[in-house]
Image 1 (cartoon, rainbow over the protein chains, first blue to last red):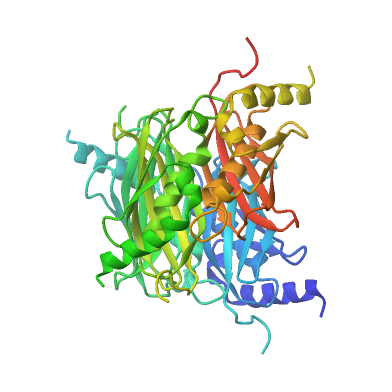
Image 2 (cartoon, rainbow over the protein chains, first blue to last red):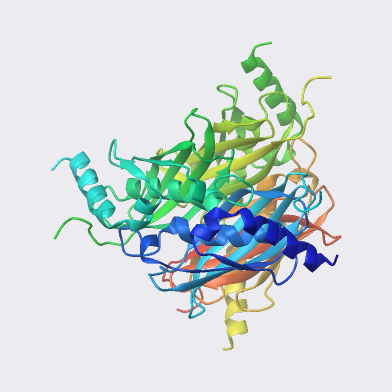
Amino acid sequence: MSDLETARQCADAMLAADRASAALGIAIAIPAPGRAEATMTVRDDMVNGFGVLHGGLTFSLADTAFAFACNAYDQLSFAASAHIDFLRPARSGDVLTASAVEDYRGRRSGYYTVEVRNQDDALVALFRGRSTNSGDSIISP
Amino acid sequence: MSDLETARQCADAMLAADRASAALGIAIAIPAPGRAEATMTVRDDMVNGFGVLHGGLTFSLADTAFAFACNAYDQLSFAASAHIDFLRPARSGDVLTASAVEDYRGRRSGYYTVEVRNQDDALVALFRGRSTNSGDSIISP
Amino acid sequence: MSDLETARQCADAMLAADRASAALGIAIAIPAPGRAEATMTVRDDMVNGFGVLHGGLTFSLADTAFAFACNAYDQLSFAASAHIDFLRPARSGDVLTASAVEDYRGRRSGYYTVEVRNQDDALVALFRGRSTNSGDSIISP
Amino acid sequence: MSDLETARQCADAMLAADRASAALGIAIAIPAPGRAEATMTVRDDMVNGFGVLHGGLTFSLADTAFAFACNAYDQLSFAASAHIDFLRPARSGDVLTASAVEDYRGRRSGYYTVEVRNQDDALVALFRGRSTNSGDSIISP
């Protein structure tokens, strides 16, 4: 199995059970191992008391891309920490894409950057996540 | 109007329009200006592909407490950035409480720490947020 | 040996070899296990091109307090990551005190908050550090 | 004056007064506006109680590269916050290079990533900084 096939099979296994991402309407693409793109359309029920996308849901989209990027190697990894900078509000109807890339991957920890952009390619949020490798596999028996 | 009344009226105004927090089933209490408690029960549709609460929703709960803590002064404030450390997984049925306290509040920025604990008082996540003051009011005409 | 004696012996062992903190003129006090205070007077050769204390040296003071706080248990711990918010500039002649407290200590990681204040007790920087336990001892043979 | 000339004149003006970076033996190169490289050789007096480069001085090197990257536009900018992940220790005699790139630059804030690598090109630390624009100029009268 190629590295990309492994990454995609890990993603499929994760997606099959991921009710939270499904409830948010998030779609996933895996362009390469260590990368992931997550797309979400902002719905009316995602908006906070100031009429903009709840920051927690911006984070959820970025965190989802991060999770799929760091789980590409059939080594089950968890988010250990993350930092997010909110640069621009998003509103109902906006289509957001979170693109995760791998900055560094060590034996135990991985470091990822995720950019969240809207349909005009403007940067909505900048996210950095650190993953830890649990030692378990995702798709191997 | 006392400071606590102001804080609670700001919270009421925000809650009335906050569809995202409502969709997550988050309840809010304002014990004092600059503090907030947000409570959420983990539902089946909040769980990710590894059977634990999606990190984005843990963040959403903490971020909600942060938003209500920093908007206590009738000065509309937005989350500018946040950092979260995930310490312990949460599972369906867990009842989580996020408690936000103010570390420092300057003229333009505020700094808040939020602890997310489960029903056994174990620490699930440690969150730090920075807010920026927009200069607008929340409840004043 | 009491917990406080252990903490202080760990600090003494670290200090004896810590040329970097000595070169910065940093003094250390250990009020309790998991806490540390580091004090430094800003010198002319610590100032950057804008006439204020180099942010790296503000960080160094906070990081030193953090290191002494997390190494109180005779378990050699390293700084794994840190975040700093710079709130106020410091200038030559200012006397800064960094006070580290433990937010949470797990088996492998510890989380600490450090406040850096000047001689007027004004907050100069807010620092958060995560330590990892190496499994080695500091003072035990 | 070209953008690169402006960036280099800003760097020269900053360097002329930067006693802290000089005391650390840091050399600066400006390959392009919004980028900077800072180089430092680890000295014996930079080592902490565990025989490795004091984390505060690793941070200082990265922070210096960040400061020169964000001050390329003749708009005096300060470090507002920074996050660092320590990936690998450095030891006396190591030659470290911190390379800063601009992730995003808005009207008021800029976001930069700095990688610190040793003489073997191994990643020692990953740094992210946010700058704020003061509105003042650096080299204009």
